[in-house]
Structure formats: C-alpha cells, structure tokens
Image (cartoon, rainbow, N blue to C red; front, side, top):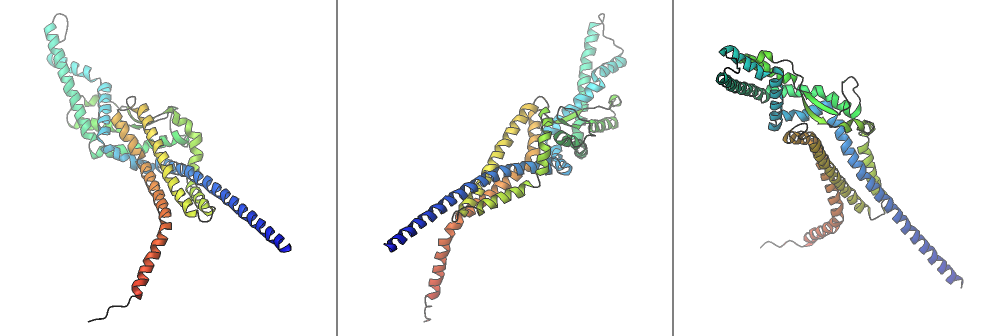
Amino acid sequence: MIIDSLTTDRSACTVVIVGSSSGGNRLRQSAAWVLVVAFAVVSIASVATGYVRYRLLDTDHYVAAVSSLADEPAIQDYVTTRVTDAIVAQTNLSNRVASALQFASGVVPNALQPAAGAAADAAARRANAQAESTIRGAVAVVVTSAQFRSLWVAANRQAHPHLVDILTGRHSVVQSGDDGRLSVQLAPIVAAVKARLESGGFPYAQYIPAIDRQFVIIESPALRRTQSIVQPIVRAAPVLPWVGLALAMLSVAIAAPGRRLRMLAAVGWSLVAAMAVLTLAIWWGRHEYLRQVAGAVMPKPAARVVFDTLMDPLWTTVGVAAAIGLVVALIAHLVPRSGPLLESVKRRVARRADDPEPADG
C-alpha cells in the first residue's frame, strides 16, 4: 500500500511538471512572435528615418542625388521652357520687335494703310517667332552644357536648407512660407543665357532683366505640418537599427528550445514583409506626388524623374534589407536539413576509407 501510494504521487508530480513546461513554452513562443512583429515595425521606421536623416536632410548626399537631374532630358526640356518663357515675358519681346520693325521701315499701321499695316504685322510675327527661336536655342545650349550642371548643383545646394526648414524648422534664417514649397532659383541660368545672347550679337539681349523665376521641386503644404513628427523620428534614426537588431536577437533567444531556427526564419521573413510594406508606401507616395505636382507645378515626365531620383537611395536600402531578410530565412530553413546530408557525406567518406585499395597487377 505504501509503495503504491508513492508511485501514484510520483506520476502526479510528473504530469504537473510536464504541463507547466508546456505552458511556459507557449508563453515564450507568444512573446517571441510579439518581438518579431515589433522588429518588423521598427525595421520600416529604421529604413525610412535613416533615409530622411542621412540622405534627404544631408546636404552633400542630397546634392549628389539631384545632380544627375541636370542630365535628364525631361528636366532640360522643362527648364528650357521655363527660362525661355520668362525671358520673352520679362523682355516684352513682341512689342520691342514690332517697334524695331516700324523704326526700320517707317511704316506705322493705321486705318488709311490697311495693306501696309497687314504686311507690317505679318513681318512682326515672323520676326518675333525668329527672336523667340533664337532665345530658345541659346537656352537649350546652356541647359545641355557642363555650365548648366554646375549652376544646377550650386542652386540645389543653396536651396537645400529650405528643404531642411520645411521638414524640421531647423533653419529659421531661411525665408520660407507655409506653402511647403522647395524650389531652385533659375536666375543664374537666365544670366548665363543673357551673356551668350550678348556675345552672339542678339539685339534684344540688353533688355533682359534680372529675372526671379524658380524651378519648383516640391509643393505640399502638408510637409509643414509634419515637423512635429519628423523632428523626434530623425533624432531616433541612429538608435532604431540597434533596437531592431536587439528585438530580432531577443525573439530568437526566448523561443522555445527546438524552435529557435524556426523563429530565426520568421525574423528573416518578417524583414522581407516589412520591406514589401514600405515598397507599397513608396508607390503610394509616388502616386500622390505626381497627382499634386504633375501638371500644376511641372510636366508629368519631369515630376516622375524628380521623384524617382530622390527615392533611388531609399529603393537601394529597401532592396538590400529585403535581400538580407531572405538570406537569413533561407539559411534558417536549410540548416536543419544539412544535418542528415552531412552525416551521409561522413558515412561515405568513412566507407571509402575502410575499403582496401585494389592490389597492383
């Protein structure tokens, strides 16, 4: 009777211990999955804030990114049109051409000379079109030259503090309104065109004034309202990658024994999924940017090139992060299967070593 009682008590204790261990494993697995989800969220924030802090708000990286826009045909065509229209309008070209023709011919259109007036008007239209063509040609030469690239880089470097001010409010000395507009000053390009026209003997070049015309890159009043959000996020950018790494390692460490490789694979796949979510967010942002800017601010081809150029470093980071997550997940999946394969290789090597070598004839 005593022996039977002890045996029963020992079995009950075993059942209690096993049940407690199973409940603890489930709790650890749940906590590990929570950490994996937190890692995915932090990964998105880390990549996005890192891009803003180290690419968009850093003057050298920003200028290096947008400098390639100077070689884009869509940007060159848009700048050529903007500068040509500004020169024609500010110079009052049509009136000056008409006055010059009247002075040269001595014909003044009036009701008593309808034929002469019509001829003078036709000649004025032809001369005006020729003058506009000359101006556009000079602008095109400047815009496609190495000089334009230098002017473009200098103008963007000068405009970058305005972008920093829009996003963070950091540069209070920069004059900026509440329109959330980032623009590049085209006045140096107008000056270069004027110098070229003067050297070519264009008679109306002397009338080209200093023109305040801008190339708008971003125009969104909502950017101003993001300052309270951007400032703390940008300050956290250096810490977030380490937070994400700690979450990933902790999720694997607290996983139940025997399931850590599966949790490591989950970490890898969660990083891939996080980058997929960020990709969708970038595409949505691209759609909204083109909807707000294209047509109203600049032609759609130019707007598309501007957005894609600014986002190119972010696309690279997203691709690298997704590739790292995929490699980690695949390694975690393949490691358990490599054990039997290694054992099979070892057995084959040992079998060949034990086989006697054939005797020489």
